[in-house]
Length: 114
Image (cartoon, rainbow, N blue to C red; front, side, top):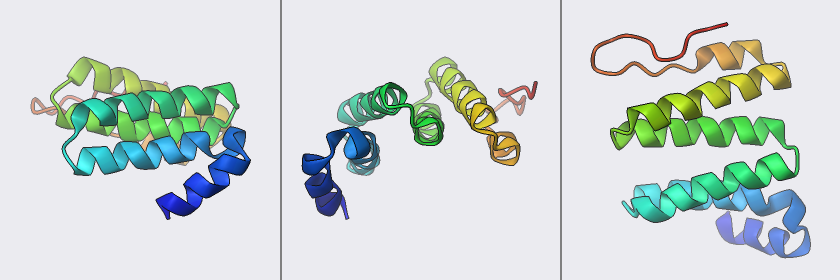
């Protein structure tokens, strides 16, 4: 699937760049290459923002938020999840936005619904 997306990206970078980067971020995370995963998550978010793919920006923020939570970077995770929430709300998907949850070990929710 990734190779097919990369081929499509070569014909329409604008449309596929953020998707390829997000899949690569998930792949690097699985392979425990956390530095590269971080770069890919951040690049995917930036590409989605530049091309105004708000729904894909929201997804990238959400996955990055969970990634940073797993690494123990709670403040960065909180920021990413809040941005995911905001992007989902902007896109008009209130139920999806409300489904975002991250609870640190002290069981206090990080995301406050506004």
